[in-house]
Each structure stands twice: as structure tokens, then as C-alpha cells.
Amino acid sequence: MITDAQTDTVFISKQTFQQHPRITQRIIRLLKSHNVPCKLLLHTNDSWCRDYMPIQTSRNRFIQYYYFPDYLRNNSIDIPYITDPTQTLQDLGIETIKTDIIIDGGNVIKCDDCVIMTEKVVEENRRNYSKVELIAQLESLFQCEVLLIYWDKMEKYGHADGVVRFIRDKEVLMTNYYDFDPASADKIANQLSKKFNVHTLSYNTSRPHRHSWAYINYLQTSQLIVIPAFNAEEDAQAHQQITQLFPDYADRIFSISITGIANEGGALNCITWNILSD
Image 1 (tube, one colour):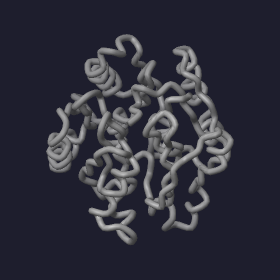
Image 2: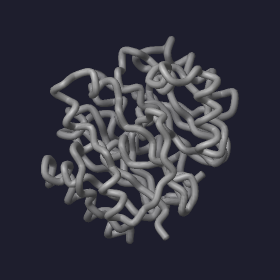
Image 3: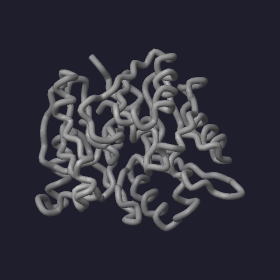
């Protein structure tokens, strides 16, 4: 499995650039200053390219799933925002393995020998697959174990990248669930601990920031890590905790203010698609 720490090229939707040009330009400049190419994806209908671009499992193997999430398809106003990445992938010269399984890329956390997803994927595909059948199909596609974690249905998207990230080997980092929902935090931590040593983010602040969940949604490549920032008390604490967990990155961990993007429901991992290029 190609993990974030192996990737060397980043893509951002043209929609992100059009809607948030200053933020996008800052991201592109930072990436390029560390020799990470950053390119725009054309033929896209919304900013959240993580959700509709394929999953890279090895250097030349990409899984193109069916991007048709219920939170968009059940509202006629939102249907036009569903992106079919076929034309985009043709422009990039990327061939894919296609599946009819409904997936959001934001619900796929790639580890060395495992993929972590929330149970939202089961709900999305229940008409066509039993849970057992679905896991078997996913493990065949990803060529590794699939670990399902609890989906807090108060969060309609069900994206694992707002909950957990892979660090290295058998270590993962969980967002600050214990700061606001200890019961859900326990469920998720218990599920993850069956395979991983679980680290958790936590913040000591006078007043929790509404985007404190989003620090987990950082962008990671082989060259650097970029953490969301919100001019909040949690900014420095998140940076310090993540820096301690990634000593290999030393002075290559940065923060970028993305309040405008977070106000729309996502953060840095959501608006990027990073791969290991040829």
C-alpha cells in the first residue's frame, strides 16, 4: 500500500483555486519550496478532490470506485457537485481498476498493510453487498486488510480522515474525540487498538475552537507535513503534538491558515490528492 509518507506529487482541484485562490497559492508555494510538485485537476465539480480521485495501492495501480455519496445524491441541488474523475484521469494518463463499490476517498486511511475506514462504507453499499461480502471485495481490491471503525452518525460524511491518520508501523493518531465525545472516542480507540498503538490529540484551551477536529486532516507527503491552522489556541498545541509523533520530519512540519476552507466542512487532506508518481 502506498502511504502518504511515500507520496511525492500533490494535486488540487481547479475549483479550490477558484474559490480560495490565496490559500491555494500559499499551499502551492510551500510545496514547491520543498520540491513537491503541485498541479491542478481539471474537469472537477467541487473542491474535495480527495473524495473522488482513485486510491493508489502501488506505483501503477489505482482503484477507481463509484463516487456517489448519499449526502450528495439525496439532494437534487447537490447532485451537480458529484465529480466523475474519468476525464481527469485520462488527461493525467492514469489507468485504473474500476469497481461499483461506493466509496469516498476521505474514508480511506492507508497504512502499510491495512486500510482503515468508518462503517459508513457498509451503509452506502448495503443494497448490493452484505458486510461480509463488502469487506471481502474491499480487501481484494486494496490487497490488504480492511479495518472498520465506528461511524458517528452525527457526522454525515463518515470520513475516516477526520478521525484517524497513520503514523508508521503499528502506530496511528486519533483526533481529539476525547475532548468532546468520550463514548465515541472509546469505541474507536478500542477498535484501532486491536491492531495499532493509538495516540490521541488533546487540547487544553479556555474555549475549544469549533474546528479543533480538523488538525488531524493534515497533508502529508514524503517531504513535509502541512497542518491546518485557525488562529486558535489549539494551533500551537496541535503543531507540537504532531511534531513529536513525526521526528523523521524534524523541521519539515508547517501550518497554514485555512479557516475559509474549514468553514465549508473540510481541511487540507480533503482538498488534496497526493500520489507516488512515476
